[in-house]
Image (cartoon, rainbow, N blue to C red; front, side):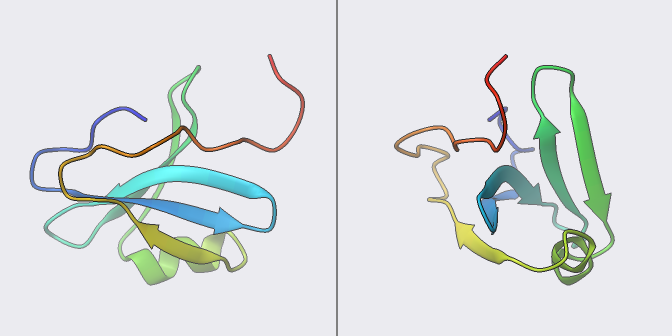
Length: 79
């Protein structure tokens, strides 16, 4: 995952077998990185709206230092 803005809080959105990284900005806007290779992202005014846009799922909050153990496994074929 690319690093979130310094004031952002990092999370992983788990939806069925899809896992995407993202962050919440201080103003509440939530962003996910849907395809890191091409820089495709999704965003919404709130985290609740973002999760609703994916059709549900749950949030795993990442440690504030940005260090996490492994990248998320993405759904679909490898590139």
